[in-house]
Amino acid sequence: MYLTKLPPMQGDDYQVHQKIRELFSGKQRALFQRSDYKIVVISDTAIKGSVLILGTYVIGDQLPFTLRLNSSYRSKDNGKRVALPAVSKNWVQEKLERAGVKGMFKIIPEKTRCSMKGSTKVTLNSVFIVGFLEVFDDKKFTDALQKGIGSGKGFGFGMINIY
Image 1: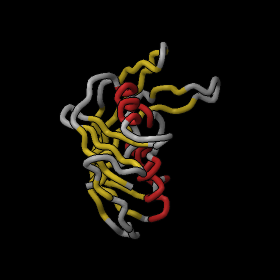
Image 2: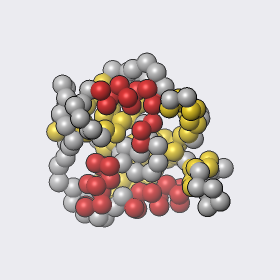
Image 3: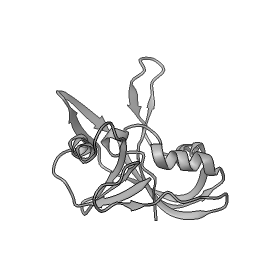
Image 4: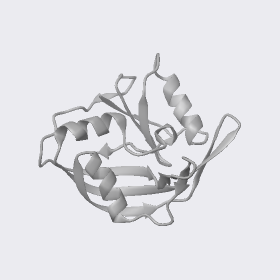
């Protein structure tokens, strides 16, 4: 797994995701986390400026991290995603536990993020998580680092960015 830091790109989150995918050949899956100053990408394939990051994580490892989540759930009525009225620490902790970690973190609500996917407007509710995590299942954690967690990965959500 490789980490690449890129300069900021113009466009909404979905357009940035498309530009990032163009950097790779084939159907490379890439997770990204975007800020005003840089874009951080995790991928299985190296591109110019990439650093190999997949190390061995063991139970008990404690790591600083950031994570952007789409604060929503799937409606049982119609199957569509619905915004959470408020994000609780328990909701975030459940996401982290599925990824094989527990965490001490702060939830930072962000503005709603809007993107265009073709002619469809996509609105996502964003929360930014910053803190420390502790690994309790190394296999689940490695899988979550590679695949991300939660929904909206094509829009810059779900990437666990460890430092």
